[in-house]
Length: 177
Image 1: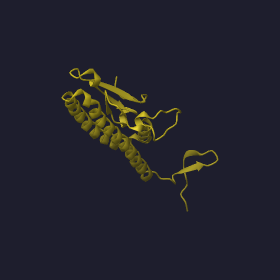
Image 2: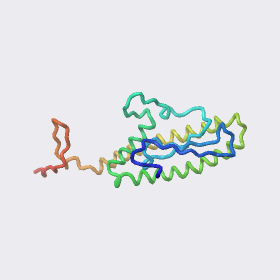
Image 3: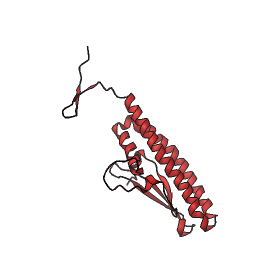
Image 4: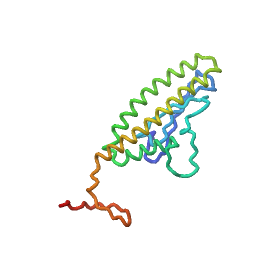
């Protein structure tokens, strides 16, 4: 089965390093939205903290920029509006980021294996927090970019609205005289 489907809300992929101590022998590659328009961020085992957006507890089912899951879901939702128009650029960007993360994570784990055990948690945490922050900030920027593209690609006078019900009709308006 493929990793990312339209019905999944997030994806976890575990990468285990058999030659590392159990305390920090793995990386969880975490995508906090549908994998198609999201990025897998490495979360290293043994870290001591996350950025606030990664730990925000969604007590209610409400979208909020305080939650990394919501930030990534917003971007995925925006791309779903017109996948042909918006998805390719977002996916292209995340593919480049993903390749850099994969390369970096391997080097980070290799370096961690050479360090004194007591220094490893903070070393891994430093990178984990850096990657989480960059991914959330990038997803916010990409969302704004998609919204801007939508504004440029939307003819706001093309449809007739029924204001009492706030229902958008698929009937074209007549040309103004």
